[in-house]
Length: 216
Ligand code: ADP
Ligand code: 5GP
Image (cartoon, rainbow, N blue to C red; front, top):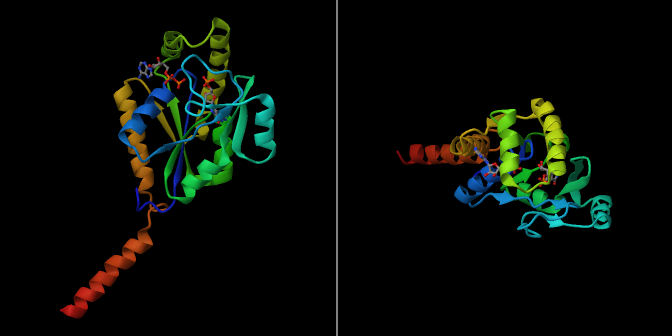
């Protein structure tokens, strides 16, 4: 939105398997001007995942170098093992350009982004309709071994335990409704008075009013 003065980092968190990726993909398909942050991770790629698209897959040493040189806006160890981090430069550029960028990151990352960027970040938590639905979705996706699945369910408990720090909660029961909710949240946030360039609009309208009065 060109008249949105300051950009937005739309942080989307929630337990693994809840449908964050699915909901975000649908949002990006309908809103082509939204950017997606591509995280760096030390996790090994899953079948079908592409470097630079799903994640930037890096070694432990590379991740350490990125972290130490300040190139990550935030980073966290997720699922008690692999490191994940948000590249700083694209996020800062999106904010400066007044764009919206989606960050799919965990609760630790969300907390860090909120601490650093305050209201410039909008925090959305995606919740499953039930614990069993979450297990079913994770199992249906068939991307994890039984062990990895257990680890993700343990992380899911921690994610759910930190729900209170978010600005919005979306229940991902019916997918279309969840996507519509995320779209509506973004729309409303883009029009928040704190982001909208209302002074410029006000001035333009008042100038026009003066001009019209002068002509009369
Ligand atoms: P996440 O990114 O949160 O780990 P995914 O987007 O990979 O989760 O979704 C996990 C699985 O759940 C996928 O198989 C996806 O098709 C399915 N899924 C997502 N949203 C829904 C929904 N609303 N109802 C049923 N299944 C869903
Ligand atoms: P996976 O892709 O391994 O299934 O899940 C990774 C988890 O790590 C997801 O819950 C996702 O939200 C989180 N994650 C992905 N990228 C980042 C990141 O850059 N920073 C943080 N803090 N978490 C991330």
